[in-house]
Image (cartoon, rainbow, N blue to C red; front, side, top):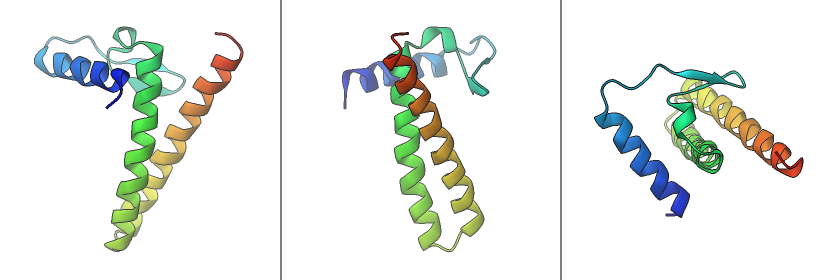
Length: 95
């Protein structure tokens, strides 16, 4: 587990413990709870993790003939990949 994944795990645990967390904020059309609390690197790791998990879950769904579920997971993977690309593009521009 990377250092950013450890930070993400710690942050997620603190959010689950905090029942009075602020409402979600919107970023590039995606909703990320407590967006201001996540660093850019952790947010990018989250997107990469979602991409990996959606890929694995989609394969499992297809093997079980859950075609619609596999489709939605494929869409999730595609959106997560698009988010990762936006991070990569903004990093290459020096933001």
